[in-house]
Length: 381
Ligand code: GDP
Ligand code: MN
Image (tube, rainbow, N blue to C red):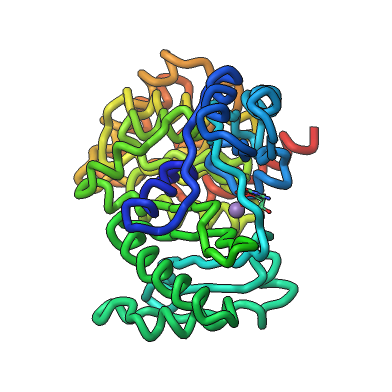
């Protein structure tokens, strides 16, 4: 789950990290009123679940409340990486002497939280990682012991030469680690962590990704979810109880079981195609799930073919076949459909589908290859 910058900053403030806090506005008039309350120059920041807002024109400075109104008006409603801006954060503008990057991610390779810090902050850290990897210091945290103060000081010395700033940064890192753990985050970063001309160290941007599997035990974090900022397909899938992940390809996949869904995507790639999504409809034969799945997949204009891959174990494939037939009656589909179905009651299932005018295959390779060919044919025409 993604949360907004202003929500991430609230998590930092709760740990005592110095953050120039502002308020959120949804209209230019609100932005003006907030700027007036804050007094002085402000920064107006698009609240969308995407980075690189600065470059996209979603971060602007304003010296007066009138200017704040005008700039908020320009940012509200704008599109950043395909997401519409519904909210802006109005925060006191800071004078910046330096910008650093500090972030912690859950790293699968190390099987541990790993810190990345760099004195070269403000810009895309991914870019620094490519062009100047030596400017990034990494440190894995042993979860048995947690993140220790001496480690925080070591990292802080990579950011600043001034001892006071090193101490301040070490405290911030320790607090950020606590926020990371308490939120159940898979990523927590401050970029930039600034120094001011007066020498203070502050966080002026924050980003958290929350591990969805943590949400059931963290209702206070779940409450931060902003559905209006999530891609529509993801919201629909979540509401329908489907595990759906949008990908960039054109072969829409409807599969029962996460393992089979992964294998299906592998096979699509093997035959030279690109899956449009990961989707596990579960063991259910519920037609409604199939309808919802089809609605979500056909909502993506990139999809050129829909591939069903159903394996019946405990699930009876005749139930699924009935689900598919019912679903097809309810929803209009303009792309070709390839159905592969095997397992319990397969003969009955194939007959049900044949009676409804669908050809059902039982061989997975054959079905996937056919779907990939159809997607390619559609692409060429
Ligand atoms: P991002 O582009 O989405 O990462 O948004 P940021 O909040 O990191 O802002 C991008 C850049 O805008 C920062 O790296 C700063 O250089 C600049 N910026 C953001 N807030 C302020 C501010 O209060 N004062 C000044 N002078 N610059 C700011
Ligand atoms: Mn940033």
